[in-house]
Picture 1 (tube, one colour):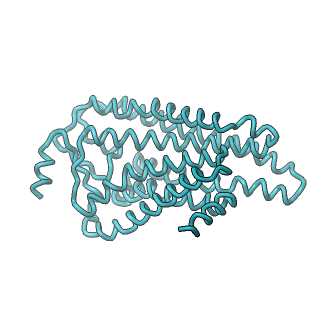
Picture 2: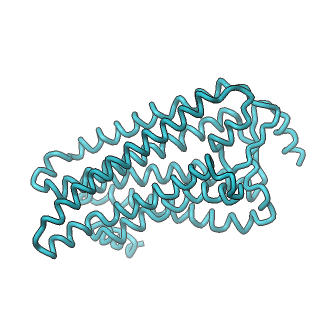
Picture 3: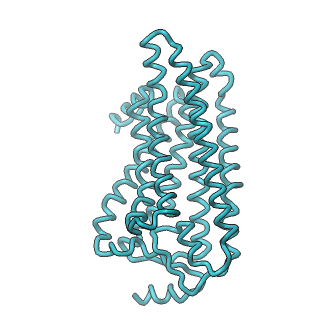
Length: 312
């Protein structure tokens, strides 16, 4: 408690309160949190290891899957260890710069994750609608360049967010009722005018999510049109199966993201602890399930993962 009071009086430190109202259940809450996090790390590192070791998997689709795994590792690691420190050790302090850095990484990686899903939709579009030119259009070098473009876009879009907040004066009450530095919660403890910050956040969310979802919808509408033209039922089924994993991952990523953002902005009637738990699950559930979905739905990857698992 002494450490808590000391941190609270430090103007360069914020206090993350965790999940207010559920303090008595922290140990029980930490069990699924830590379990999901460990499974997420094991699954995504397994994907990186298998794709790295197997020369036959050095293809655009699997390179994109590795990029997705890296974003999943980064997002879950940006949030979960700090949340577990709150649950287990009551370690609630975080510096202002540390808080803004966490905000930047969370949103930059989320924006990059979204851009990778768009690239994966384009990859499936070429594989189904233009298979003869697929290998010449999507080379490994082009995939690396597209990955770099996704990173640059994410940084340019998200960087103004922590920069705008860093110029704001913060009130004496440095308490953030959350397990991580959620942007809206951080903005609420600012004493300055955050109109520009709010507009920027809303515009970026609409541009990134709106544009990316539009491009994904366009890709899949073209895919469906091509699939419906296939006369062979077997080829028809095979074409749809190649998209199943990506569709599952896409729904798993965007659905909780949109729900979490909408409840934080407009969900005044939803209990705060429900909002906080849902926000944390967004950073835990998709990273845990994504590698499992791809391992189950992609035969080539499933066989290689099985081979290394049996060796272990």
